[in-house]
Length: 148
Length: 140
Image 1 (cartoon, each protein chain N blue to C red):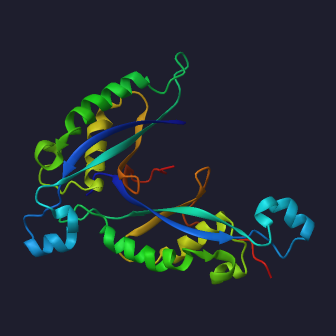
Image 2 (tube, each protein chain N blue to C red):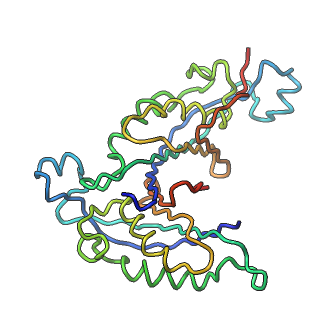
Image 3 (cartoon, each protein chain N blue to C red):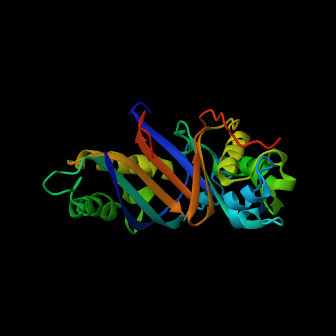
């Protein structure tokens, strides 16, 4: 419709995973100071909430930007199966070289979902706890924390 | 610019059915939402208005006034209604979250006289929502 309005569809998903925040670029003391309890060598876990927003034309035949079942199966395959009940550091390739902060997790999820063909990915929001939330909408990131 | 958001809740029933499609296609596309007798949700609506605070009152707009607009335009029209049959603005449309959010925007925009309507976010459940805003406006 050419009424100048944009409509976005949003969906929230959940997964549980563990992580440890530790940078090989920092000394033991610095890791401890920067990451605090999150640097505990055995890691710890969260119940993550991932909110995906997509935009597109609302199909007059269905009233939908995208069928929920199509979005669900894509997110399930690209994100939930890869992350749920996993160690982000050990089980997700991207985090073998990158600190799995929730900032980086947002970016990783965005990268996994941006090729969705049925609607345009607008943004990814990840809630690490009910008090910590991060959003990423896809601008180029130059300084992602990478551990060599 | 300041953004203020007011939240309301309403409960309504709906069903998804396109008479131009076969019964099988309706079931395939809409799944359980195609149940002919309908089903219901507790909807949560967040309405965000953008503006500068008035230098005298300190308000973008009087929340009492926004509350009255939402009551008159949305609650009275949609609360405890069957959206397919009882909301004229949705006639001929599948009452998805996307379409209801757009109808809500269209109803509210001309009524907001102080500040301007910035965003409408409608939750059908805690995990499903639709947003409507002007093209080119950052939704944050």
